[in-house]
Image (cartoon, rainbow, N blue to C red):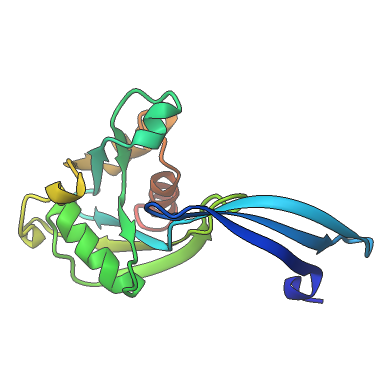
Length: 193
């Protein structure tokens, strides 16, 4: 039996579609014991996205960005967030979109990029699936200053960090972004061994 066989959607109502779409849905779910249970859930659809960690194996460095994130701020995080470059797909392929985001945010025009996995980041309420990439970089690949697109509200600082320092920043609480932690741990296990 598939999940589609176990759900009967009764009602979907859009609560907000100002920037992304917030819906409330009433559905019946067939439980493991065969009984049908009515449930109500809200889901936030902001589209799918991609993220990328540029790394330099010889220098043992990675490129991250630092920027203001309002949702983190209202949840008590009173600092700029350090994270991997990322962006919504906006109807582009993950590979095309992450190349553009990497150049906009970090200033690096990367050569070969490698997809390593996909993950749902908060599947209890958010529909977003994130495509994770890594790419080797060299200093000569930097074609601009990065920093994002000011007209989109981006004000991004580019950070080039030794991998050991970036990993230590997870432990001491300076890096708290989930996608970035996942990419750094992947790099530690599979690239910088």
